[in-house]
Length: 89
Image (cartoon, rainbow, N blue to C red; front, side, top):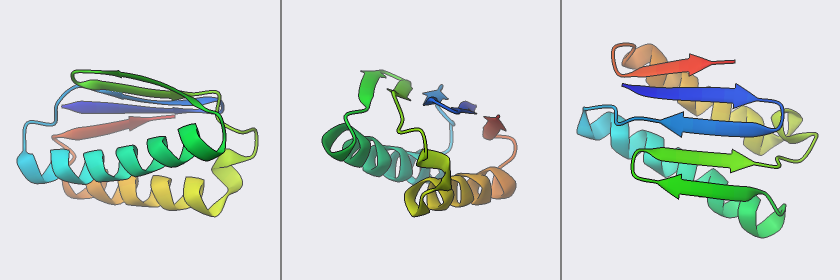
């Protein structure tokens, strides 16, 4: 199970989904956002096995196209695979 926590100033991904296609989708979304936010917006990354935390998000992040697209994509995966992904806000 992967737990995704969305907060105003950070995003946390914890755990392994246990299904390859779910892991691949979550990894693609999270790594794309992490790379962009770290390089362009000075967000901080904490990466460990089965864990990714993106902190120091810009104050307007969740209202940006990237923030909204990220939530939409993560929710789509969580809706399709509820036994493998849980999103907390």
